[in-house]
Length: 338
Image 1 (cartoon, rainbow, N blue to C red):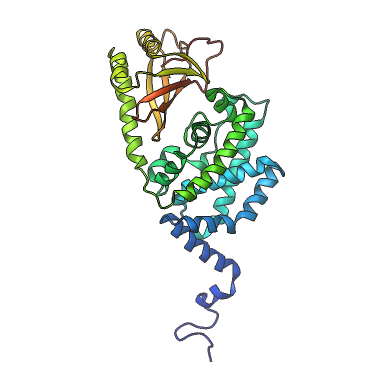
Image 2 (cartoon, one colour):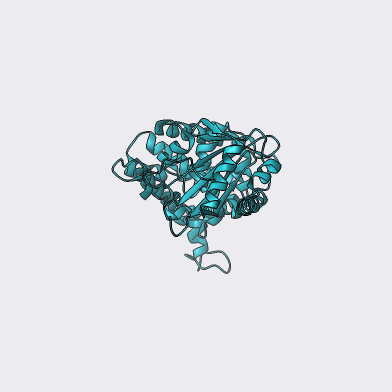
């Protein structure tokens, strides 16, 4: 006579769940993933804790013990936070987390290879487009609310590293911020630790609509480029940007509105155009990543890409602007183009 429950023969899959530890773990993982996807922060924390040992083993196998492995673990936690909504097989989240660590570790190795040109460095495709993180992830508004709690010196490297598409290597971030590579690593480590604390502190707070801000920022970028092409760049700056706007190279102020207008007008007259490819928009920091289209008779007039790194004042106007070329043209020694 069967010892199973009525309607469930002995040895059925239903009872197997209770006796198979691996299957039970998959079920528990699936429950936690669905809760995390619904916005339950505690569930994500439990997932990371359950799989911490396996994730760390992967980090150590690639990088060995030390600060690099710790950095990769922190990076992986942030990536999981951004992308938990992308998990398609909740029961296999452990493998997904380990893959994130593996790709982050390999990316870090590429970043630190001194013999390899910075221009050849790329983030792994696993992490997807940061645009998707901001627009599709249910936790995006909460992440940005926490980022806004950081100091500007910690916020900028984190946003460049995790949310842009072309200013992601340590060397590029160092060039954009005007700081040594070692300082980039230190600020990223401090920023991730403070972000974790800020996330915990802002769990129940009201969060802004990041998707709306990004859409508005894209419109603003296209209107800015259109104004420049029609000869009204100076008028747009006067109307929308801070009267105290400063153009920075690294941490040094090299000019203000007049220099910006002259530079932009000169590039437009030379036949240079820009095309928006990606936007990142917070309350205090906005990044526009542009492709630069040079005239056919002067294909190296400007570097092929430029990132506008804009700090906003309390009224939401651009107050400080850094222009950074992730892939500079050899031997160009001109003021970065608009």
